Image 1 (cartoon, rainbow, N blue to C red):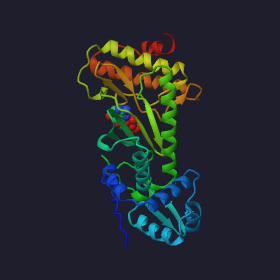
Image 2 (cartoon, rainbow, N blue to C red; image 1 turned 45 degrees about the horizontal axis):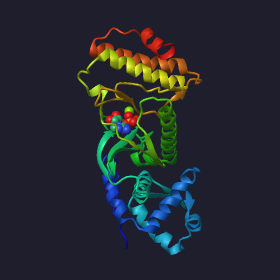
Image 3 (tube, rainbow, N blue to C red; image 1 turned 135 degrees about the vertical axis):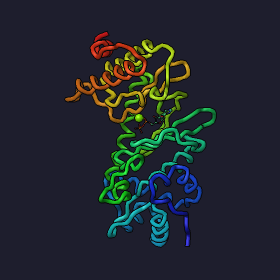
Image 4 (cartoon, rainbow, N blue to C red; image 1 turned 90 degrees about the vertical axis):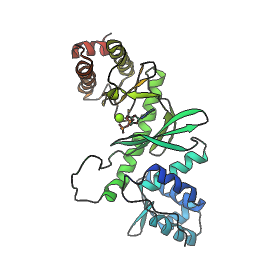
Length: 304
Ligand SMILES: Nc1ncnc2c1ncn2[C@@H]1O[C@H](COP(=O)(O)OP(=O)(O)O)[C@@H](O)[C@H]1O
Ligand SMILES: [Mg+2]
């Protein structure tokens, strides 16, 4: 019996590194089945075995055999007669795709494991990359002891959340491309595959982790200038905070994490841009003892 290993059900253990090992053991038929199920996912569908046979053009016996192994490995689920790809299955498929297309040379250490994404460092030739896997809607067990009445796997792997993550990835790439064109300091997106975005890695530290900066008023103005450029291009970040601003080697800010951005035509646009400005004003006043007012900040963003 083929056995390609098993992804642990515990989400914190099913890290990309485990998945990366997995990819090496994946046969071409396994990959074909995962790809078939992943493309069904984008149409909100699960597939019967017969559909998998039809779409993948693999022999029925092979599909049968491989599906059993993929299910044993927690890459694919079965409900009644329907098969669906699980989160670990989608991760596996994407990692293989990134390797096959030579987008990344290999996945390195985690650089940001958050509630909404897992970000890993990677290299491609000499270029430093950040690989962001979206986990939108994941129930975070990190730092919470709250008991839930449903099981993790059910919730984490539901089609709905995988699709939301894919759409988040798609949206962030589109927004980053637009922002880059208008001169906003953001990481350059290089490639998207399903729920994963590969971008240039910023050699920087989150503003939240810096004890002091060279010239706080200059940095404040520079952040506001970037927020303004985005705003002039009809984009409001909507989750701006000291955690989503990385400070580079020359002290320059880079604004990251845009999947929840909204347009300036959004019904709550005024509220959201004000909240972004308030977050930064409050942070600078608290941490660096500035005396900025929200009105000053809004003036810089809207009217300067
Ligand atoms: N392009 C990048 N370069 C360097 N580090 C990054 C990059 N993108 C994300 N990170 C790191 O990963 C963390 C999480 O990424 P982020 O886009 O903010 O997603 P989340 O929604 O999980 O907060 C960030 O706080 C940052 O430390
Ligand atoms: Mg973030």
